[in-house]
Image 1: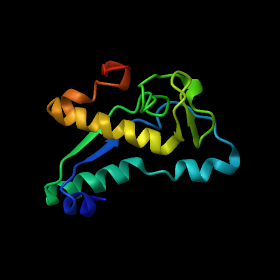
Image 2: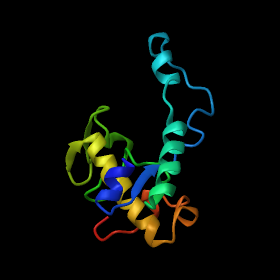
Image 3: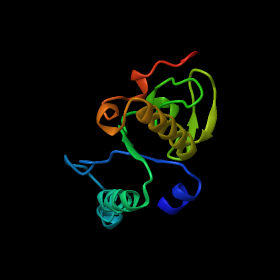
Image 4: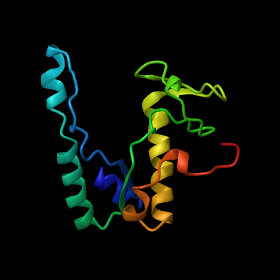
Length: 135
């Protein structure tokens, strides 16, 4: 990830998933090993370490509503997620793979983060806090 960002002269935008495991989540017995094996903080640590050495900018955006927000019109609604892999905006009808749509949202929020002066200022912003024409 970091090598590609450096090669293409790009930055990295990621969701800030600190505290994702806080609170009690009920998970089926079959899924416990998979769920507890997720290592978001380890990935964040690796990327943070590597970008410092490579000189690649990184910003961590607030994950709130990134999976429910339309990358076309910025309408946020829980029902926009038809399934874990399908996204269909209830306002404008835009359809896309849910992961692709969320990645576009994270990309745009990351760009806004850099323009607002970096992670410290931007981690408080969420999709609904940004006004876009037609949104």
